[in-house]
Image (cartoon, rainbow, N blue to C red):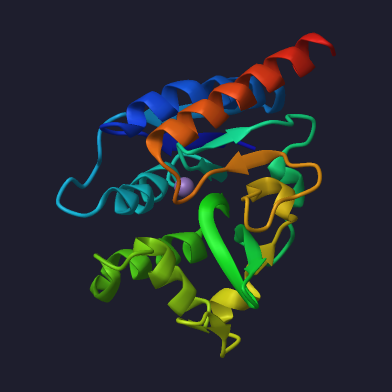
Length: 214
Ligand SMILES: [Mn+2]
């Protein structure tokens, strides 16, 4: 199976990606992933988050499985491959965070299996221009496709996309508001640049010493 780990860090996020990608490399080596890391947006005319959709769309033509990680997230435990979560009939692998009495799928970390469904899903996201400037960007468009309403986030309809989605353990996308006991990825949404940089550095250091310790 051809697998790719991808991310984009442009502008100030380039510095975050530089630190976080140190952890991506360890994971990629361990589990046989190619790395596709970009420091330029693919679609500068839209908010940065939308370039994720375009990069995934391109990579799905070359790979069987794509693993997206936001540049404000670091891998802290490389012992397990996220592709082990793959299941027949599912193409989208994400964590749904639980906070403030809501359950919110988060596209900061995405596992995606190639195929007709993945391509269609990404095309629908891209074409849903209502959310170009929404505070959650493509994540908002994805919530709609999965049958969610917003403010508060409520799951209203079990769409075909929802049925093809597997919600993976929150260790894969651990955030402060819904932290995993034993995170595999630490993610820092809504934090300052300095906070992210400091925590990503300490995550990278932590991984370095845990790998060195075997
Ligand atoms: Mn993020």
